Length: 234
Ligand SMILES: [Fe+2]
Ligand SMILES: [Fe+2]
Image (cartoon, rainbow, N blue to C red):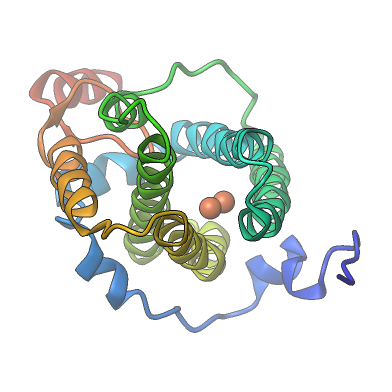
């Protein structure tokens, strides 16, 4: 495998944020997900970009960590190893890019506890193998797919043009990550994964479509209390 540690010119942040970019087609992601993001989430997110960027940074770091854990845990799956290694590299590159975007905007790093989303999905993971691995990979696919759907929706509404371009850039790799996770889930079992995909689709839809007390990158519809709080701070 010939891989270089240099950043590909297409991944240079200055280029990404200044060059106009056609949007990657993510219609297959809309079909995969159980619902679209609510307008209420989008409009609150649009007004809270520093918080969203902090949470986004945390998500990229966690995505790399999850892929790394899978590498250690399932070291006998050769195909899994290579795809996951690439995933770790890409997520760490995104992490660095988001840190740099935060720095440009003068956003100081601050601790932000995780929302309910990932926990809400992972609590349904089965405990025996290979079912546990199938579930983790399906959950990974949903997280990546939702990220994609939100990057695309945010790119259309935010007033920060550079960030909008960056979100469009992410669509390409994050939509591939979603496909990778699904393909990997299919590759490690002889049984159909359709039933589990349908199950997690519904769990994920509920996390996105029901009131949530916190604003996070993957949070649900902002609750009345959350909206009142944010209006008081505006
Ligand atoms: Fe990423
Ligand atoms: Fe990703």
